[in-house]
Length: 273
Image (cartoon, rainbow, N blue to C red):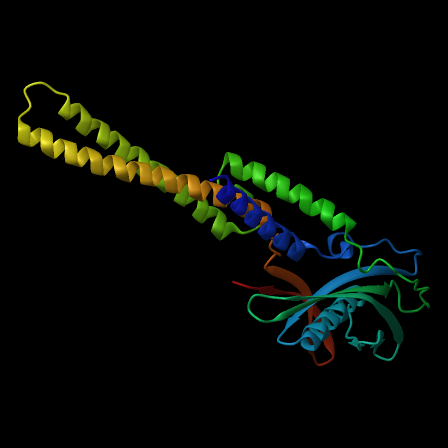
């Protein structure tokens, strides 16, 4: 029995370590760096595509959208960091970091960190950035998330999953736990009622036999429901601790429409279901 318990603990630990590895991202995705001077600022964007290159191009396009929002006019941009605004301004930006994730649906999500000039009429003093692979802040962030998630799920099953934005799983866990406990309690009460019938006076043999059989069945169902509730509760705690924090599934970004050389800013949205 002890050896089986140790094997289960080791398996859970291995799965937990594997889950933690998938959660580690560079610190600049959690908190943008601070620019070293007032000629530029840092911008974090991402793109999704069937290939890494397509995702990178979308991320760069969103940097272009960022310029559009800043200047309010049509701008053409390229990946090497040179953007032209009606051949009037030279708007430089510099890609300093890149991070790629393979998503469950087979697509790629590429995050980029860029240094962006604050104005187009001045030469920015871009600086070197050496912290692309730093994960210290993210480790601390994930540790706090994991602890708060497991504490929340210990009090209310499924709430830890909701904290990590896995709302469907969190709600399903909570509903399942309530249903199992409710079914167990209901069948336990019914079994007790059958037991009371068995212990009553002036009961005939057939009624006693029927009540006894029903009591055993109901009691077995009750124990099964409670046992499943314990299993679901344990899985709930494990999932709350080891699961990744789900990225927000929607992002708003500025858009631009042109009509007879008149430009208007709007707001677009990408939503994943």
